[in-house]
Image (cartoon, rainbow over all chains, first blue to last red; front, side):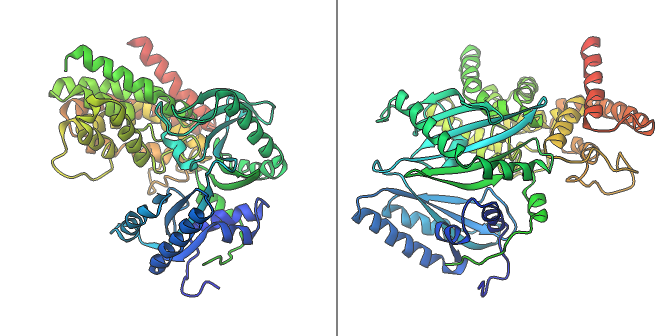
Length: 259
Length: 238
């Protein structure tokens, strides 16, 4: 039950659309995105501290993205990345800073990035231009897909950009970036990118159904964000030119999922 | 810095950020917008004695944070991140970092800003505003409308003469809204340029309405063709 939280944040409704289209179950979603009322932010910090200690005990590395969530924003929420216990002090400052927006909740999610697991994240932009449909994929290794937005020549993560016409195979790789101290070779990167695309191909039917739904709004472009950790592909988010319009039309399941 | 060094630095900035602009052609904010704003910005900087490195870099980066899937949403924050990254790579930008970030943070005409706004920021802001006016602005607005699946115009009041503009629903309401932007211009040079832009908008709207009444303005393609025809005519006369 959503006791004490009268409003389901728009961002949560957006995630629920992923449940509706079968990308994950409501239980998996609630497990992946840990939600706290904003008044319970200290508990979020202490839970995160436990997770980081647990990672350390098991010799794992993860990064955690903490988001501040208002009632009515579907995306571009303020967020803070945590990889070490030493960053928790800054996290508290982030969570308690004065802001214009009224935030209802704080969330966090975890992604493993240690060398023991395959870990990539990316974004597929589906666009329609001059009568043709293209898919542009940007993928990075062991990092958050939000980092893709600031890709540049000195990017700290291995990165591949590729495109294809509609669902044609294979992708044409347009750009490969290896940071100076990367342990991966260019060949490995291309091979792992191919593997990632095959993982995505296995969910083609679900993705195509979701795209067909978004196409009904006549958008010229929209995107899906994904991550693949230890062979498991998860579609983790989606963006369109007008998410509110999509959500108004979506009779989504308004579950709780509060931690 | 010598002018030749400023030019070389601005070339490096453009090489670094061009990739961000390319995908945004889909909603009319591709590299052509950056280049037009740059050209006008450098002209205004020359007239006002502003730092051309800051103005040029601000113009090249101001909308670089747009995305092909979500467009303008959150773009200023992303442009600021891109600029901050470039400042780490280019020492000459690092020296003017705060000023450069100010030009980007307040580049949109509608945004309130802390007074006094540095002259460099006024140059970037006015250059962007000018490009949103006239034929260039109408074309960008139409492409943005196509991209977000907006209807072209209200069925009975296409130019929004008797309603409050509904910017999310009708592209031509946004074209009407553009009429309000010249009041925000800060520099004399930009205000002077805006007169020609105003005439362009008036002439476009006149023809749009005539075509609409004859049933020849059916969708965004028709409206874009009209804008393109005007732009071709402009460049022929020039």
